[in-house]
Structures are given as C-alpha cells and as structure tokens.
Length: 121
Image (tube, rainbow, N blue to C red; front, top):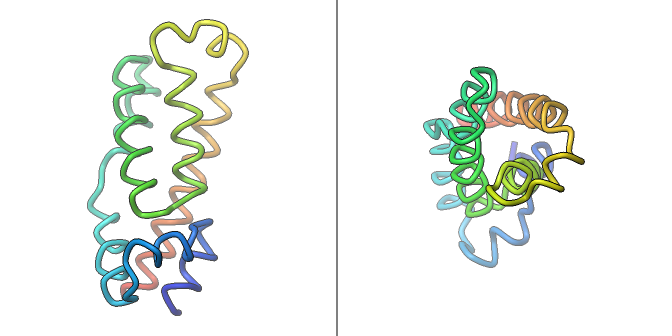
C-alpha cells in the first residue's frame, strides 16, 4: 500500500499533506506516529464518562493532530464535536447529536488505526 492509498482509504487529503511535506517517506513517518496519539481515545473515554469539558479538550486536541496530518475525515468530525461542546455554543450543542458524531468518529478512528497498522507492517 502506498501513502496515497492509505490516505485515500482513511479519508485523508494526500494532496494537502504533500503541499506541506513533499516526501512520501516523511509523510509515512508522521502518519505512523498517529498510532501513539491518544486524543481520540481520551475523547471517547471522557464522553462515555459524561465529562463534556474533558471531551471538548480531547476533541480540540484530536482536531489539531488530525488537521496537521491532513486526516480530513477525522479532523472534520473532531471539529464538529469540538464546536458543539465549546462553552457558549448552547444553540449548536442543543441542535447537535454529539452521541452520533462520537460514534461516527469512533468508527472512522478504528478504521484509520487498522489501516495505518497494516501500512506500517
């Protein structure tokens, strides 16, 4: 599997990543390091525990990590969760099914982790 294949499989934006890092071997090193990032797992744990503040903090971290790696699908979902949980966004929070977004992110995250592990093998 090529780096481009990996990005296509996990909903990433390979072209965007190449604009920042034009060497596949470097992109590979960075995307494999995503396996060590705990921000999504922290978000899932905080949400399951009912801690919206900690879930917001973890979503904010996940959004940044995923955006920096051009993992667009994960970054977009993390961003939606982050904004819905942001203090002062009461109307958005009331109109957003955060449970559904977290479940969708969890599924995408599991798929991404599996694909990256396959890629790294």
